[in-house]
Length: 149
Length: 149
DNA sequence: CATATAAACCCATAATATCCCATATAGGGA
DNA sequence: TCCCTATATGGGATATTATGGGTTTATATG
Image 1 (cartoon, rainbow over the protein chains, first blue to last red):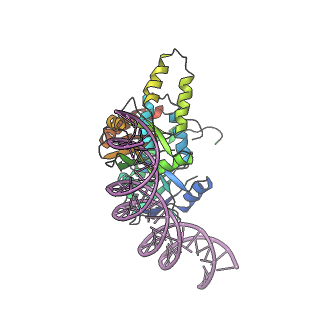
Image 2: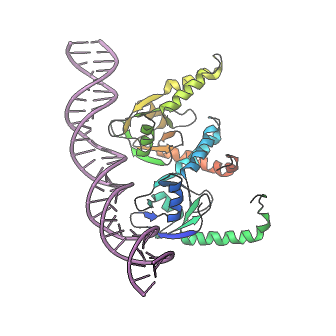
Image 3: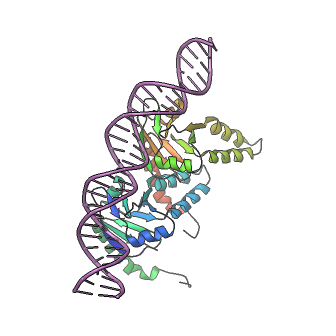
């Protein structure tokens, strides 16, 4: 599980340390890297374990081969996904596209989201989270959950 | 699995490097090459492991002999399929038909699609992908997958 | 068979990614 | 408090990848 937030530094080779707790969760699952893709809805990059992407692939693969959605989803998700492997120090190197999408410069914010985590340019995340907090306040009662939580 | 996109160069002998990550997935499956055929819905070439084509052949073979789809599939896919082997540097040489179908000139874009990948002329892919992204946004909720994601 | 044509092999190089080691920093425990 | 360990960071060394082009081998065709 990925929780908490960490701010790390992007070096001039484009590398950044993945927070140790996030990394250890992924290595426990048997992966020496992580899969990521630009968010559809905001300026973050979404990170998840390879198994999650594999499930998405299965789902897409089970669609009718000539269904239009098939191409739409695989192109918009899989084509923009990247497999980033950890180096011996637990860092990943970000591609130009990932840097562009988030606008990160020197500081990189990692934000735990349970089964996934995100990467943000710190000030962009602040904007986003202030906004989210406002919305949560007004809609608190709408968050329902089932009995066995 | 095939994810991400890579832009490589077609040399004057008609060779192009298959992205290393795609190649290593195929060699892991025991293949020193890849099977491809022109898409019949767009301007890309579809690439997949030999095992996938074998599965398609099975499927076609199980169709009713008088089913119209039988001829359609076998003619449009199998007749136009090519086995392309990697040279010692991991390149394949494209046939004239493959080049024609895509319209590639100097740059070749490889696009991961999970269990397959595609080859595009870069500007054609951009057109296609812009369109796909628009549609994905409006139909995101239609992609359903099972509980344990 | 001989030859034209295309395919595969081999080597060289530049760019990039990865490894490896060195240092800094913070937190925990004796 | 002080040391030990884990983590984060910086940068040189090494390996991998993509690309170009010459040479050899295979294939087809008359």
